[in-house]
Length: 146
Image (cartoon, rainbow, N blue to C red):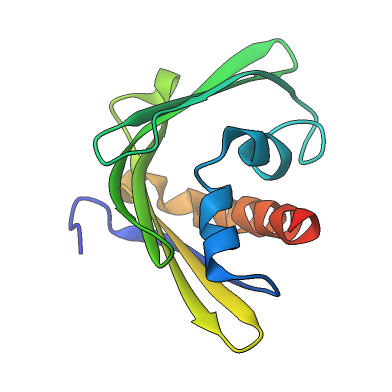
């Protein structure tokens, strides 16, 4: 465990599709634009979704919310299809603060169980409940499109 990121938000969801389908959605910008960002998820406009999905590769997801452009950035730390994915997560304007997102997917007889944990710095502990609500909303959106 990363002692620098002691605050954890954790959500889980069962999907009635294969672990591979669930995993692949997290690396596909077209899918990301349907379940993580954009008008299907919240009141915002997607400006650009760029990703280099390999260990050490980075991403930048820019959205416009009201008058603000928000750039979500990170780097892929682990990619073990279809079971495990981890990456850093930050809003460029909040740098150097960042989180780590850890996604574990367990195949089962009816599909796959996904558990997502966002590990955050101690000064973001007040954000845990909000993060859990946001990730739950995104996983609900992903479940609908898969």
